Structure formats: C-alpha cells, structure tokens
Length: 189
Ligand code: FES
Ligand code: FES
Image (cartoon, rainbow, N blue to C red; front, side, top):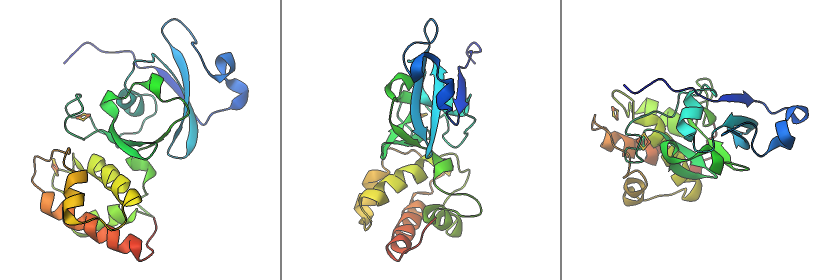
C-alpha cells in the first residue's frame, strides 16, 4: 500500500455566491477550482488539476459506484460517462473536466427506480462478485443511448474492454439485450 494521500476538498451543489476567484482558475498553490456537472448537478472541486477523477469521486464527492481496479485504464471497473462517452475515471484528470458532464452509476437509477439496465441485470442475476458491474452498466448505458437496438456483436464490442474475473459475460450480454428491448418498448428509470 502506498503512502496516504491528502485528498482534495470538494463542494457539491454549487453556490454561485461562493466561488473563489470567480469560479475558475487557480485557488492556491497547485490547486484549481473546476466546475462540472455530476449526475445532473453542478459541482465545484478544489483539487490539483492532475488529480484523477476516480480519486475525487470516491474521496471528497463520496460516490463509490466507480471502482478502482487496475488504475491504468485497462479493466473498466472505474468507467463513468464523460459527455455521454464511457471513459476510465482512473485516467481522466480533474483539470480536463471544466464544463463537462459526468455520469456515474449513481446517476443511472435508484433502488426504488432502477434504470432498465439495472433491473435487467438483477432479474437475470448477471453478476457474481459484482465488482465489474458498475463499469459495465455505465458502458452499456452509453451503448444503448447511441444505439437502441444493438446486435450481440455490437454489445460485445462495446463491453470488450471490461474485465470480469467471474465469467458472467453471457448473462451480461443477455441483460443488456433485455434492457434494450424494454427501453425500445418505452421503459424508463
Ligand atoms: S481502474 Fe480504471 S480502468 Fe481499471
Ligand atoms: S461479476 Fe465478479 S468480476 Fe465480474
């Protein structure tokens, strides 16, 4: 385990009257105030620009949906949507987020109102340990937003970068296809 790091502070629910330096630019040595949209809400994060989005999400922002796996953009456990595209949050620097929209697993649905993807994964029990699933769900959402009727090959291609040690691939494919069908039929989160 590496040395303990000092995570940056963050303020969720931006108050326009409380923006250091007009809401942008450097705030103190090595730090920058970055404003972006997170799951539909404006947020401001005071952090070193080179801090990784995953650290900020799981640290000061308190969102544990995106998970740490490889830390190298290779496993997909940390996937989030950045302006609708599935990206590895462990490789996105906070300094690149200004004005962009980030969606995490928490932004898909709730236990009371799950996204059709989440409902289909539960119904088909498309998971074992579940560690990979939040990233897979986020990438599947990006796929279905862009392509409501994907072929099996297109689902496999969209999820190809996600590693799953438990081998739930077939059920994941079935769940994404089921959710796509329900979304086409009008299901909503
Ligand atoms: S933890 Fe980000 S891709 Fe593996
Ligand atoms: S369900 Fe365990 S890693 Fe995918």
